[in-house]
Length: 127
Figure 1: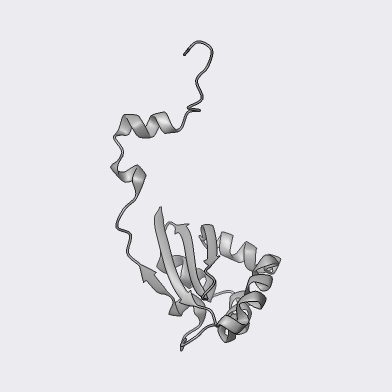
Figure 2: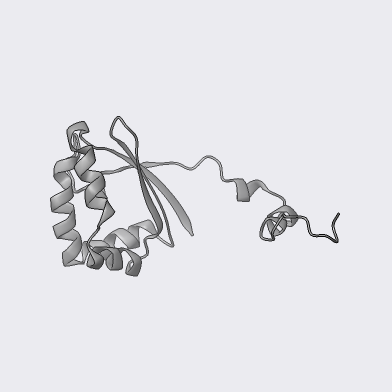
């Protein structure tokens, strides 16, 4: 699974409305994202308008192409475009993708990774 992190810049005077729109994303948009491979997708908004997005997907290009084929995405991107600074492309195409430089689970020994899947709380037998 590919982990993707990206940034965009939301206009400061539009931040509140941007957050409100994302508190109630259209159900058909949510379903389309899921169906085209956008998983564990989150957006984070800093108080200066920096938007950081994170998702997991088998293939980002395929996920973007899948969304591009949906009518709901075209409508959503058209509505969202006005919220961003210096953006000449639709938001889902104009974001700055960040390169991953560290992932904890990739560096843990296999036995430690397996141990993390279990509840670390000591039981009566352990004490």
